[in-house]
Length: 430
Ligand SMILES: [Zn+2]
Image (cartoon, rainbow, N blue to C red; front, side, top):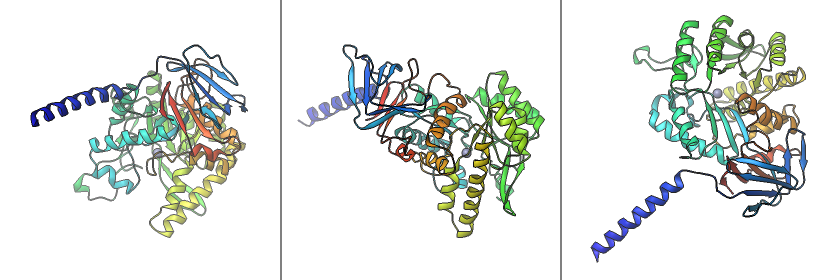
């Protein structure tokens, strides 16, 4: 009896194991799917269509509009009183960071441990409706993001489609260096050192070799507020950044920078970066170049709000709040001057899956809900190099689709309540 039980439980374990393996690789159903809901967002024309229907076959959209063909054998999924819209884009994330002591987690946690956390973060972001993201640096976990991106692409784990930068790049003593530790302990920086144009080229080649899709460079930092103005030290000169942009362009890739204030943002714009992230306090010439060259600003308001709300001391909180207020005033000027915007939250130091807050803050600080959604979806698709593939519900596009209650053009906060998630024709949340 004991033997029989042992045998049958091992058999059961084997069977379970087999089915788990089958479930692990996520693939599209072979039959067509029709999604139906009360509303659908036509992002390019800036309107809501009522009702909304989308016909999906495999990983792609075949048809979208008020009504679509209903082929034989199609499965109809009725999402009721909801709005269908393209999967959300977050152009500035850190899968390898989690809330807590931001500086010490990268010292105390091993890269394998951080990689496991990153896979959970990717799942949380996807379940919140973010089907495409740009990871702006592993902060000391090397090129471990390559493995996470590839596992997602192979359908082994759930997560957004990703553009990854590997470890970001930084100067000795710069923004992401490990300052204020005992030098004898040789605490490593959270970014890879490059101290001149030649070293930038070498590090960039290494990053691409290890699987990066684009390059992230820290161009300014640390920030300080003096006399009601933000100050930030630049790290690379314009010719140094231009050498980095040229090397990336050799492979058809881009450079994105963390940068605020002058002259760092001007050097970045002149060098031809693809985006200036954080983008606080831009000079007139920087603003002009960004408009004319279509260099995206990625404001990342949510991180500043989170730091202000979760500061260790009232003084620190006041400082963070002041930075956020300064940026909010700047943002209005940037919009008026025609600086193209993309949406990025800088999630990681605050909980993954909660970053839809960025939509609400961009509206609060001066953009219309439609303009924010177009910045997120249309500019996000361009910035992540998936133009014509994601960001709109059109025939031939990848079936990255979410559904929310209410109408996001009336109230963007509904984007924080994503009820349905499909990516590449696979349903992850229903
Ligand atoms: Zn960041």
